[in-house]
Image 1 (cartoon, each protein chain N blue to C red):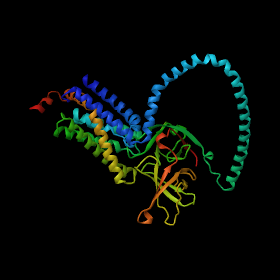
Image 2 (cartoon, rainbow over the protein chains, first blue to last red):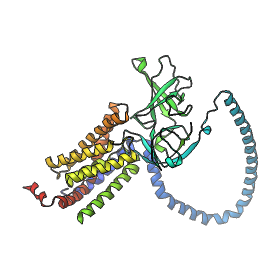
Image 3 (spheres, chains in turn brown, orange):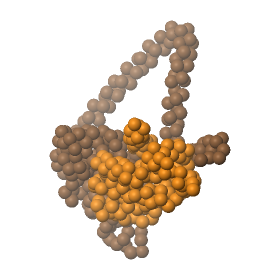
Image 4 (cartoon, each protein chain N blue to C red):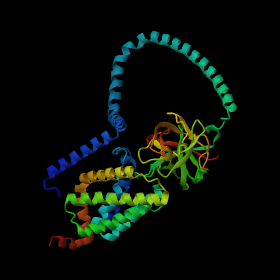
Length: 270
Length: 177
């Protein structure tokens, strides 16, 4: 027990403060923005109320004076709107053209062709090693083991076990996960998860004669039987050269931000 | 009656710890590394109640976590079971009156739990071994748990002796003679 109660409480408060400082500084910008959010959430309602009051009081006199301005503005906006509509039509023609061109290039396999079921992330593994999430859809929605899970930006992982209402998904950043991928040059590589951080994959088994371009897009190659072909995985950040060229590896930035992953899509057909 | 209340409170504590671990400490991390409150909780139960109760709680929490979150069954069950046994060993050999001993106990338990969990992950799931990153996680997690122990120590101590009185009764006096 603390000999002096007051000193004990001060000690605990200091420890909490030190912990908060460590957490903020060790995580860079992420947490400061979170703190900003937290503070603004507390302050905003009051601020909103005050602003509303202020506007109410000062707005009455300017109301009639504004009508003419508003008419002018409306006219301008109408003009702008018609212009935008025109460009939208143009864009649609370009889109259709683009699709036909893609068909020519045999790139018809797109996300739109997969049947997907949307789900929410309801839980995350509490361990520092395994990166597993639990989603709120299961057998009842037709989810089975080994189905591919994607998000808007790209590949998320695959289902490892299912219950009636939930499914566990192993993320591609898990150290037990490896994904067969291909680059724009059609060379195949293997992307593995690392313990390092939540947005990096290690691309291994690079062919010795391979020229790697920084920022090159990585997509799944369809080998291995779990992930279908052509799903975006990420982009190459840099290549780490080692003494032995066969050991060199590349670091890949994942397309999906796993820290902010909330909704996913499970591909139910391949 | 008192024992029932103690158990009810312990179960409530498990829920609170689970909530904290899954939500709060998911973003309140030291360079992306979370603490593990379950280790502290199981150690606490093992230290202040009796050995059997510690192991039962360790195993139950382990099974629940394995079913809910883990890739393969057994990682948390074996890990937390070991921590409960370890708590029994600590209880026999060390005094619980000093904050430093409790801190050392938490730190070593965290290290032991994480090593067991990592080995089990390697054997059962087949993760790639990355020694340097593993050691980094191990140390940061240990230190994080240690800092949390400093913060919750008064509560730890008070609640602990309350439970100990209930479960061990007069035997507690033998420590002072």
